Image 1: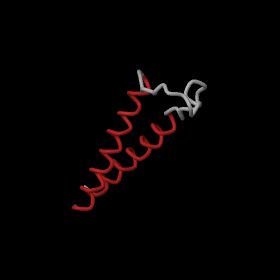
Image 2: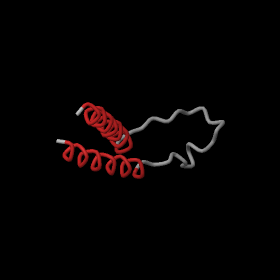
Image 3: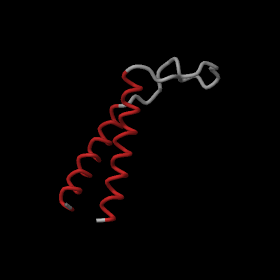
Image 4: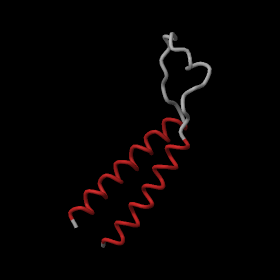
Amino acid sequence: MNIFLNIIQIILSLAIVGLIFLQSNGDTDGRSNLLSTSGFEKRGWEKIMFYLTLIVLFLFIISSFIQTLV
């Protein structure tokens, strides 16, 4: 069981790193002006990547808690 949880954590950690690197940094021309009053809303692929990153991060934290209990 412990080896299985270690493998799951390695896979989830690699997925987290990949998802974070795939996200945009937000420095496009329309959003770089600090005095701009227009807000930014994630749409499409950015929104999917953001929520997928949160889900994988949550699964990683849950697997860490389970591993400490086993």
